[in-house]
Image (cartoon, rainbow, N blue to C red; front, top):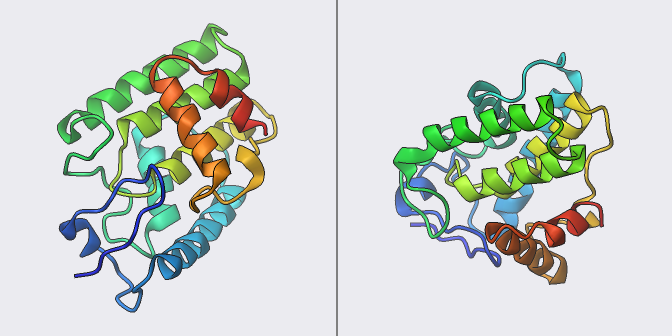
Length: 195
């Protein structure tokens, strides 16, 4: 059975999830990261070529994950079916996602927060729910960026301008910002998304 080391704050895959790897020649984390990144580049191309449509619904959220990871993982675009070291219990994912989407629509309609704050709160809550077995951070960052560009007509976030899948000081700052947001302190995340 394959095992892939996980960077700081990443959620390990269980054996059944690892078996969902489509590319059986992948044996290292570096190879996995490269193939996933290639798949994500394809998803970016898909995002740029599609007609703007509703993004704040379960269908788009799962389709985006499938576009980002579907060439690498069989379970891409499907909610996780196991509990993890973070995230809600897997059986609560659809309900928690519905609550989040209702909240985000309310925030937008009623101008409760700035555009940036709505987007980084969406990002944080998607990570907190932890919809999928893998790729939640990358997926939720892309969701925040799509919200910024498609809904608000603004530039996407810079997210520290480095690859956040690799261990390092910037990833630690990002994880620390998410952990502070778990305690309702969004100041670190607010600073990080535009750093």
